[in-house]
Amino acid sequence: MPTRRRISALRLIQKIKQHEIDGYAARMTSIRAEQAALQEELAALQTRAEQEGHVTSPEGAPYLAGFLRAVEARRVFLTGKLDALQQKAAQIEAQLLGSYREAKTNDAALDTSLEQQRQHETRQEMAETEEIARNVYLRRRME
Image (cartoon, rainbow, N blue to C red; front, side, top):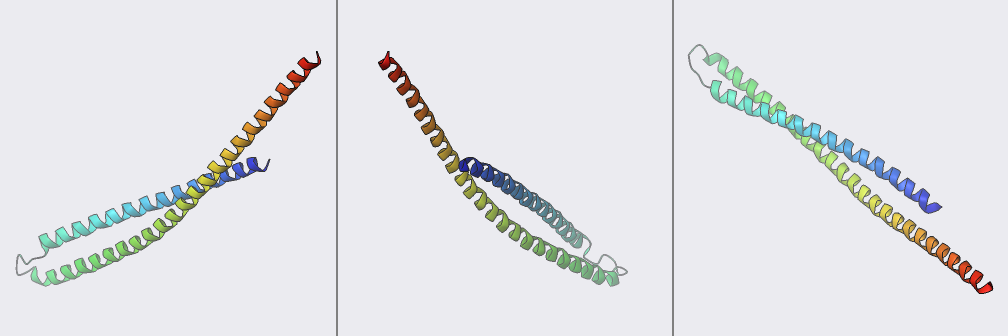
């Protein structure tokens, strides 16, 4: 019966789409964790720059400019990494949304096919019941 094959195919597609969605979700979780770590590093860097970024003695003055340049270079690097991760996250979110839409479309097609199969089985059962009732009636009539 074509409906049974269609249902099997739709269920397989459903499993594949769910696996795809789970993969995207795992990648997003990884990216969000990496973003959080970078944000924490930026905050720690800012705190360190605020605590150590002023001249406390004349001997430290020559080193302060180098320290502040290093802090700024690191901040720029971390911000660039955050921007790249945000772009990657946006791409994955778009793919996730597309897969989710396809999964929902597939679910609707599966529900329709299951309903058609149920209706077909109900019609078959009714036809069999009518056949039995007809045979019983004809037997009684012949007796």
